Image 1: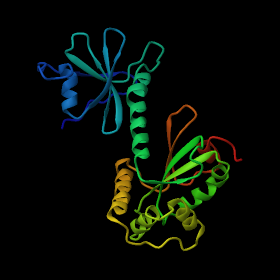
Image 2 (image 1 turned 180 degrees about the horizontal axis):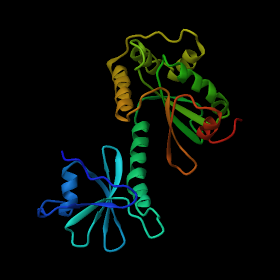
Image 3 (image 1 turned 90 degrees about the vertical axis):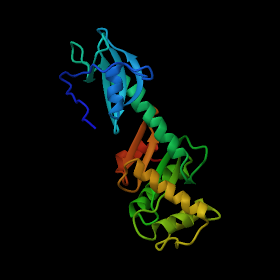
Image 4 (image 1 turned 180 degrees about the vertical axis):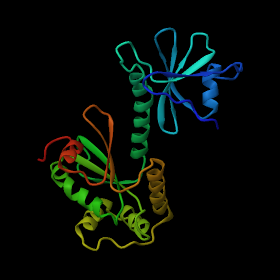
Length: 254
């Protein structure tokens, strides 16, 4: 695969392509050539000076593509006006970031988690939790005032990544008769839950959670996701400091 052309905010890089537009191509030829290299097009938008804009991403990196009026050239980069305003940011936010955030949130919803807190709580936080993670236990303790006040619901996505017995412990929690009570007992105990054999369905749930953790490119537990007051997705790695904790919980300590 040829590297995709890059640009700085000072201007645009031009990609000149003369390959003909095939009948089954969805995009104009220069844009299709980028798609063939691995670019994903998320949406098309109006651009000034006769350009056609395309909001795109490549391996998680967002970028704007502009097609010249003759449809013979594509430009990849950031479009600026005379005052230096970034004209690419809003379309990328609308078509790429918002869509990616919605997809991540849906995948979190569909994962295998244990509810901690009032099901009707206004703030929902998904947090990847390994049974052997001391920072997960710290975050659990940090969240208690908001959870007990009914303001926050934590959804613990149980993973087994830190130690050899982590998958078995995660499965034991997910497979417990009352997973929420088992998780609370585990966090309150110095020794915690013992790993135990579980039905294949439960073990596959832990495996699926581990796969999601890797797919999202995460490196540590806890890693938590929530929607802020503007409904944008936020990610927090590790146990947060006091200021970040209040932002996550959506309010000062009750």
